[in-house]
Length: 439
Image 1: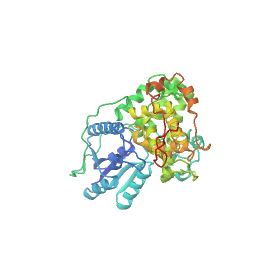
Image 2 (image 1 turned 90 degrees about the vertical axis):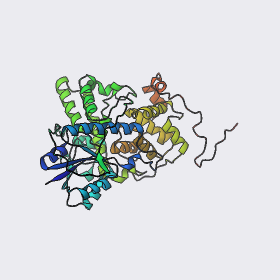
Image 3 (image 1 turned 120 degrees about the horizontal axis):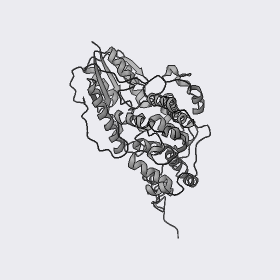
Image 4 (image 1 turned 60 degrees about the vertical axis):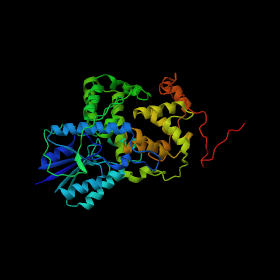
């Protein structure tokens, strides 16, 4: 009798899921497990509070949707509230597990958890798939440790490679073995009110994919992609990509179908270009591990950012002397999402205008963004800070010029009340001594 575990993470879907197909072919019994790890709800070293309520609701919606889809395949989604190593160890010690199925996750913590499990349970056969990326390592023209230094070099090497075609949902899955564990229980569907335009889960993800490519928007993507607001001004795929309710291969297949039916142009290519950026940062996180979180990043050079508690708090709240940045941060706090342009401007402000260690900003984005992905988030922050993959040594945006270019009538600023802020940035100095106004 073969008993397997499918270990879900940021891949909360049943379609284009090779590990489900392999488990269905090889196993007599199957446990589908998601580890709802405690660290997601704990304060971090960067004064952030763990996953925000909006991000948590988006995750719960995805777990609800995955539960429904697995039930239709004769399966159950089990959830452990322990850390992954503890939860899986308990399962392995209680149930005669012979196989573990897992998609490769680029994050350092995820890789370390997997490494610990393989050492603790060498007799459990491990099968790794690559459902979070466009390409598997065997398709890449370089080894994982030889990732090109820049995105441009990476893109030139991979953009002509054809990703595998996405897989349909399996028709059925092996049954669940009998076991009873209070700490690993079937997920109970929770009712979550939708607070905005995004609803977590595969059903909503596939609907957005279909809706977007049923319009002519892909033919005009590049013209509007830098807009600060507006549902139709970007694909909005990133939240579902981040939680894995949608795969990058599904998006590439939709781009190809659209180009066959409507013609290819620079805009349709640019959607793929953005997918390649995401792909680069997936392998970037895999390759560099802990360096993703070091103040000097990959560069090894000294950075000048510090930690000013009041400035950081005001930046998080959208209460700085920079109205455009304020509007971006208030939009983030209310919706869990901001445009790519808005992220760059907010990051540049924190690093260059406020002189704060870039890692505090990256951690706050991790707390708030519903499309948080470890490689893309921390890699992009390194890029702006000049300690990562940017050969030009960072980005410093002129916020007045950016406002003139992207919000000349202040519509975005007024919509999100970015013009409302305290007159003084600092009421205390870096040592927390009060700053008294001079007269």
